[in-house]
Length: 319
Image (cartoon, rainbow, N blue to C red; front, side, top):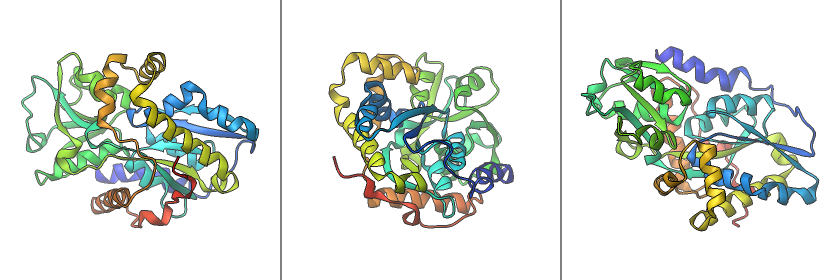
């Protein structure tokens, strides 16, 4: 199983490395987005049209590209189809590995407890040790995958001790309700949505196993260095949206909730789990290096490096 997981993750970062190019004109930016609550500010900025408004004087148009999770987004970034994207820690350390010409340019959010391992409410599983021999579903190459590794380690277990299966994030609820998995590891807003009717409960949250839940904003080096002000303006609007979340109007909040597939009322439960920061701090560097170390120890990433080699926080001007 470990070998299979390694191949899936490595093929994204290695098979496509060196292939990145500009598949579209310089007067447009392609932004990759995914329906994770870690990126609510980007959804707000999208709904408000703030990025389009900021880039219009530069003659730059915005193309939005939606992905279900980080791994397919990485493929798009590596192929040059997307210029900038928002992803979790495992996709970050995979795609910005030296040689891929993609950099970490900002932090989207820190949110350890937005990740959780879920089990049916009537399940007899009550601890990490109880997962031994069980079928555990997760999206390979995601931050939720990192959580699986860390949570199992609290009981001196590894992925070799469970039947780990790869699923699309959108299938998490179905595999549990249909009995195809004993547990799933997933992120918000899926956690809130899946547990809402009481048939599924949280076995563990990210903070219980040392998961930092660091989500990043990454960009292709070729695009960013050629268009630094475009990147700066996108980050400025992300921060603007993060700052305005507490007083966000109902219409916009409702639109974002719909994009995430949750009720507007559930946003009050989801948003407090996140710290939307933008600036890259030493805490973030430590957390991402820990992800690199952990994945290497488990022979998943197999490419040791320091995240500072692939981080460039100069585009964010502290708006």
